[in-house]
Image 1 (cartoon, rainbow, N blue to C red):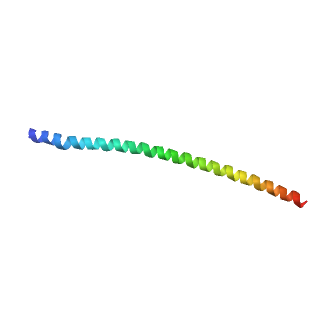
Image 2 (tube, helix red, strand yellow):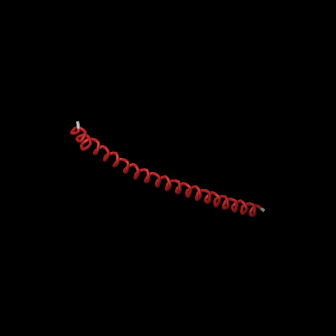
Image 3 (cartoon, rainbow, N blue to C red):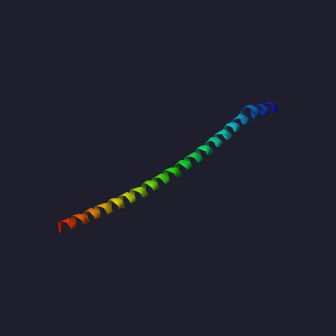
Length: 75
């Protein structure tokens, strides 16, 4: 009985624990990578939205200026 227990611990349980430990390390690294990618994606999205709003405001200013020039020329 002791020999079977020793065999099971050496050749079944120990490799299984090592495999589970390895998987845990891999998952932790991947979770960190995913979190970093999500943060970068959010930062890029916010920068894009900000640039789009600025461009929209600039375009509106140009159109307002063109409207004022057109109105002045019609007088």
